[in-house]
Image 1: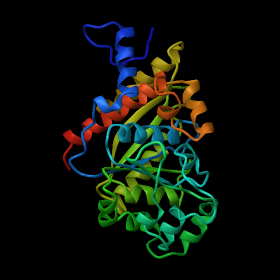
Image 2: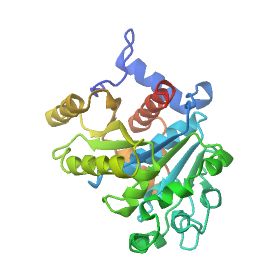
Image 3: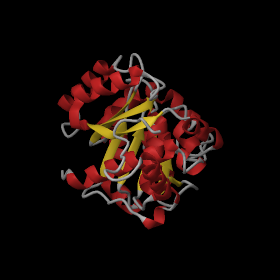
Image 4: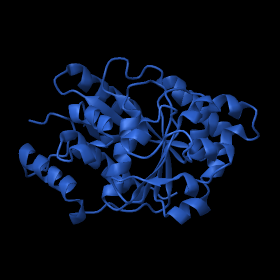
Length: 300
């Protein structure tokens, strides 16, 4: 039985029937849709704490939206290139990438590749060249806004993009600052485990500094709870604490701890492509739907 809180069990149905319905929606996306936002949304996915499901959430939320016809672009700003791997796009050295975008040597149109997993899912990859970029950025003019300057409305219009997700490295350096300056919103993944809120205060302080000095439009719009293990009391305690502290910013959907979610990147896939009927895939589709519905309700 699915014990995940807010898992979406219908008022008149059983948990098993509801889970079967959710699986059917993932396996047959042509029978449903997600609304396109009233305005393009640029969302930075950030948490300097490693291992919280940041990249996993970025690629699977993007894939969930794309699966239902929403045009989505992932910008891989992490030198490790894990998002590029999960979306199965070329990120060998020399490939047009986010590195060239930051230097002004390539546009987002030049660097964006279509993922083989969906025609609606694009990715600007990270190559090994990005590893030394923070040192190069220090001496550049407008070093905090290089990504914002690259993600022009005209270029994104040319690609017909509804959502941009920027995947950050697990640090609060210049790359993450660039991501925060370029975005309208921040999505913070928080794992349902001990020390879940450790370091979050520092992240929120940095976001506040960016709001004050570089990007007044920036808001923490979404918090996603990840790695939920229904067998532990701790997971419920963390969930309650996060909801009490952040309120409606927290998505109702919670991502369960899942072997399939962990395995998928090793095959160059999102979990939606690797095992679309799994609980992990269904949960990410539910979370993507929540994000999409907020994009219609929250006019900017």
